[in-house]
Image (cartoon, rainbow, N blue to C red; front, side):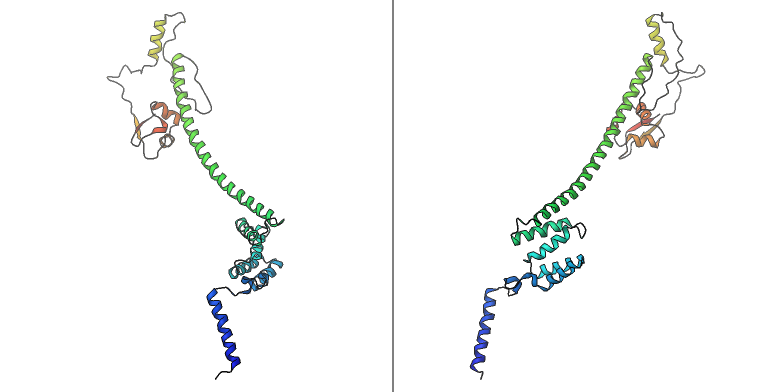
Length: 272
């Protein structure tokens, strides 16, 4: 039979255990506030590594301290200070998070050191993502400019060719610019008329100048070999010109009704 003292001790222990089970409280001293979280073993080890300049190990043990006690504000502060220092382990996203958690837990909204560090980490994050977004936008704009330039060059080439054909008919010099290679036009074989020749006679001579000539020995119409190209999927006017060894200007001159921006698959183009 147990003595009265042992019975009393067993009853007291049973009451303590039962109270703990009923309340569901966490009896770890650094969680309940009965001990300073800074005295927790992982936190003390992290501070020792931090003083020795071994920051990767300090980060590891500060994180262990948070695994043991997620309410350890000083562990958040230690991580935030390491991550916000560009000479240590600059991870400004982590720095921003841990420093904000420290301010929230420690109610240190006016801390003269931590608050500026939070602002600086936020600015570093903004700069990093702004640069990334800016690069994406710049690449897109450059690609759009390149497409616009190709379309503009095709339009200028087409208009220059038409203008030069008109100037040729009017006896004016051809227009040249740095976008379009000069084109050689056929030398006129029409007789040179005096300036006092009747206007009707000059018009007839100019019209005949551009009529296709036929050899007297030819018994029928002249046969000229014509080369065509069928547009393939995703093929541009420039690609067709490169494949056939001609310039874009020559290709457009041979196909004046073709819009370079609206090529269709299977469309036939005349190759000069």
